Image (cartoon, rainbow, N blue to C red):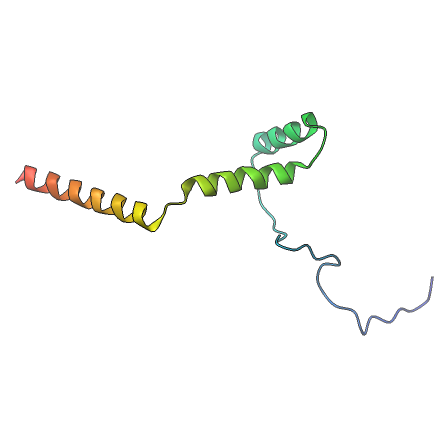
Length: 89
């Protein structure tokens, strides 16, 4: 080993950059994490983090509404609210 190293051209941050992904810290319940790890182990491949990402993506995609669906839902809710108000009077 050298006595001294030159880090003058060094850059801070991760050594490897992965495209399209961000490294974060997240706290999960022990049982949830265990379940994902067990699933990854049972599948004999892939990682539990990939499974968590897939589960989150599936959830998000199932919740997306088109603008038309959103407008219809909001209008329906407003219409029902107004109907209830008029029925109370």
